[in-house]
Length: 388
Image 1 (cartoon, helix red, strand yellow):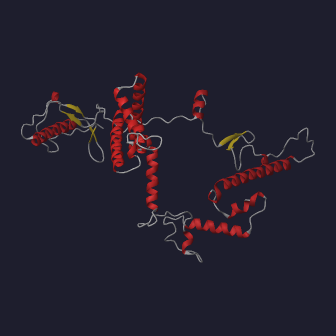
Image 2: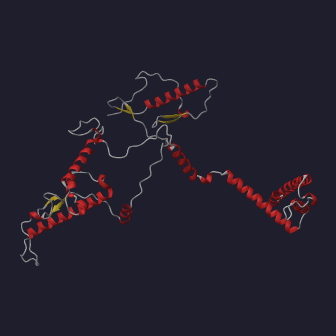
Image 3: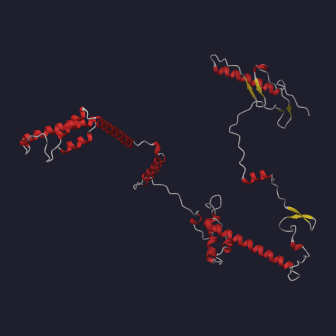
């Protein structure tokens, strides 16, 4: 069937203003048309953009009508060429999955995974049979004659020996399964395994091999019934209750979420928020500035600098300011008997003259201490001034 060509005149369309062949960059596969020339908007920007968009659309549709078409149930369809513009992806290309250890080993050794067939060829019956199950290949129960071994010499029935070996294999498998169930129950508790009558009857109590009592089986049945009651879409809320079943028996076991009260006089909310803030501050302790500690470190640095300067002046020799400070310190100090050194002997017992002398000495001491504090000897001057 030849493709049907449809023109604009056939469907009643009148061609409008179009671009020339060399003025546009067309990508019919993506239904895109590009005009690389700058837009001359002038005063009316919206009108210029509307006219350009109309012209571009008219040119693109005209190109689409010139493409070959094919008939379909919805009508003629245009056969688009392959796209030529690479469009960006919204998300990056997914990376391949990291191979497992077995996949790496199989690739290194050249091992290819093959699906194991369920049927195998039976040499005795010369046909394909199941690998396991009923009428399986190599079923020893269908063998009419079994050759006797040299060690047997007809003393033991080989068919009875096969049945005995099968019973032992089944018994060993049941024992292994029971051990796995016991380990799972001990590790995960009652929620690890479904509580059913068969499981409760098969599990011995405390590993002593004694089956569970009737009361324990009854409790297991109640637990299984309660779990089945909440296994519906409404969690058992709109289901019909059984005879003798209470309203609260279908609730799921577990702890319910507790919300803090709106008005809490005990201060629990404050304690919780304080602990949370302390935890956040401890985690970002390096980013937080302790102002008190920073000021303390600055003061310690200044004291160390003053001490080093004082030691340096002491090594170079006493300066004039230092000598005056020492003399004033001696004048402001006390004698061995606790009296002022500059006070007259007649006024040491008290009186108005003694008070005036004491006041003058205190004034001189305060001046000396202020000088020493400014020059770097504030520590000793304060102690001497306090004793006067």
